[in-house]
Length: 256
Image (tube, rainbow, N blue to C red; front, side, top):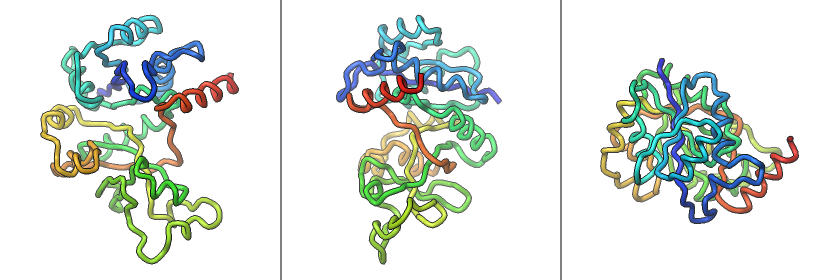
């Protein structure tokens, strides 16, 4: 099956300016993400999609394939635009966030495998167990509730499911509770799309659920699409702030 990974790469960042080009490790942040994604066995090709000549020039230095997209509203739209420049249209597109230098290549393979297996689903994504009451209540931690077959029922910034009879803390009184006895899952923002659906998705108007929660995947759910969720043990950390980047640099230096 023809599968391509697209790394949407925007230069501007409010909390950490030009973060994808930060180079305290000797490699820019985007290169770390690209090299990590290259370890995925099911990806046949990786393209960096950007509207920045600075990012494009840096990609050429470390050997990444680049597609210039012009301005786009978000990474999903940028990934869809990048497809238009390809000579051969892939069957599956994986949207890989450029600011995740420690992304697990096995997670990429698993989200692809899920979409290949679940022919009834238009999208596939990941989730991991939530390990604290603080995460359950944190609106920046997006929760997902799934059917028994792994299909997403809903995504929310709220603490879903709501624990009516027990305080959140009671679920985590000892060691972090495994998913089998805790109802909460944190969504991981890695997506695999069937190409035809991705192209249709970016043309859909934003839905009321999407604009209310500011979660793009709710547009797909409200339109009736099926999203398969694979549960993995943990997720990698995205780089959003100077503190995030400093911690990444420290981890990188200690491991090399």
